[in-house]
Image 1 (cartoon, rainbow, N blue to C red):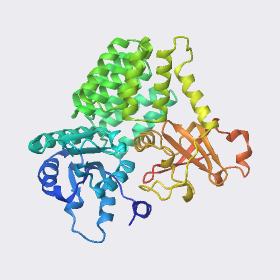
Image 2 (cartoon, rainbow, N blue to C red; image 1 turned 90 degrees about the vertical axis):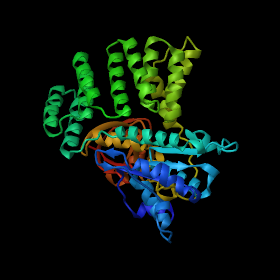
Image 3 (cartoon, rainbow, N blue to C red; image 1 turned 180 degrees about the vertical axis):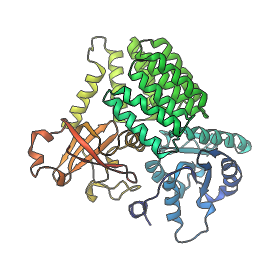
Image 4 (tube, one colour; image 1 turned 60 degrees about the horizontal axis):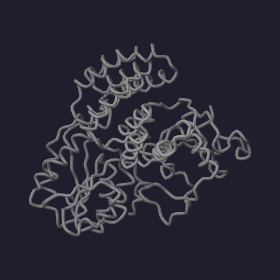
Length: 444
């Protein structure tokens, strides 16, 4: 079954302790000894890591379905590009669309550096066949660190309370938000993520002394470098907001030493340099952020810093500049060519365009937004597209767009000025489609 057909037919939940490996058959022994065996010794909050590959599967007519199922279930995919095996490269294309974390590895050979131009834009770890222990250590470290990607909140009630905290924070009802943390600690004490969020609320209140205390408590409870880095980033953001930029820069440096693959780190770091008037440094940090996350917003920010660095007379502010770029994009949307076939379940223009992920939804940002914004919330966004056959597309936050279907709009909605591209619109979250990274909206 083709991947598009498979993902449209089956809904498979991602499991945080699952890893799926894409390896050519000739490297089966290497996969079993140096990848699968050591990774399955790693323990997580939800159980030991499970590492799977088609190499573990009996050959049969449903082997491709097992590969598509394995990719979707995994939180991490590892692909060995040695020899540029056609099957691995095909499966890698699907994995890159479906997953946030894909680790690329390849044996270091004279001709191995000549990878396809698409791949050269990505990070590839080259290994020495005579030093496979180094490869094992590298992957073990990466997988262990990626455990800190999710909040690691085991209790559903706590996840719900965190969403409520974010809602009350947006409404500036900080006293109510703070009261909820006491309830969370009764249910799930000793969780680093709760303390980090606690500190973030104090940061928004500009109570930087209390924020620092909560961040310090969070650091004590972290278990991975990636978790520590996320706390340091929040501490850095707090110091920058408190106008203690020099101290903030120091914490960004600490975060980089622990996790140099975080675009949020470099975006915050760039902003701190911009506040100091160090436009060249801001440009360089933002350039790194773009390499890690090439979203449109990150590229616009890089363009802004580049303009500030090159032209001292350029007086426009960052927010004003990004808003201008959004209006320009809305007025002159890029032409999208119809696709011959879907990739990884994202759909095509010919399928009616309902697959919102093909319009730019980032899986990571989708999860982050859905965690913090429960169904029923009313939010304001920017109209990015109006389709008579579909409805109104609204960007809720950067890289997250929802759709108000036409049956929930006035009959002549596409002629009303209220629904013009680039305009602001208040919408209500009515449903999350977690399997397809879609958000259904309605007018409040």
